[in-house]
Image (cartoon, rainbow, N blue to C red; front, side):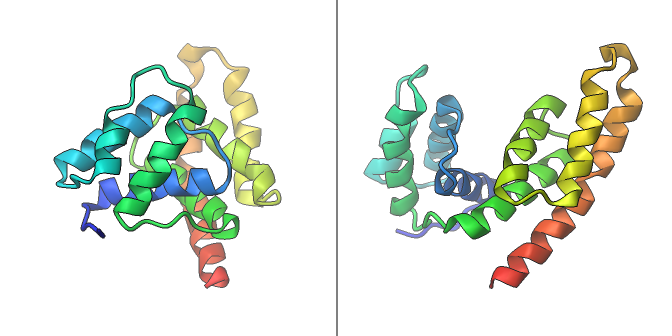
Length: 167
């Protein structure tokens, strides 16, 4: 049952599929919230209901089968890991470009992808700036935060270029 989702929800669903493809552990409560958001968007299948109904505090290993089933139910396939890494890098960079999530969270996600994607220079620059961010007092991080936010666009461009090459 393929569904038409708004751009934000579609991007979050695809990010979950990409994370699963790479064997990354998603945050179980985020997957559950995604299930709830899918229900609100009109996806009423059994697997989506099951994902939205998982108990808070479960481990990812307990939630992943529900997430996979919900993705399948709404017509989203888990991609191969070659495209998933670049798609996930693009997702995190877009999130940061538009003001979310917290610096350490998006940087940690991209740092994990740095090795998977074979050390792209756009992410290497981010890793180096994150070292400076971590060594700076929180009250003095604003210039580094600005620099990190500007680094999102080159990561988006590199991701789109790599994804186009894989097609």
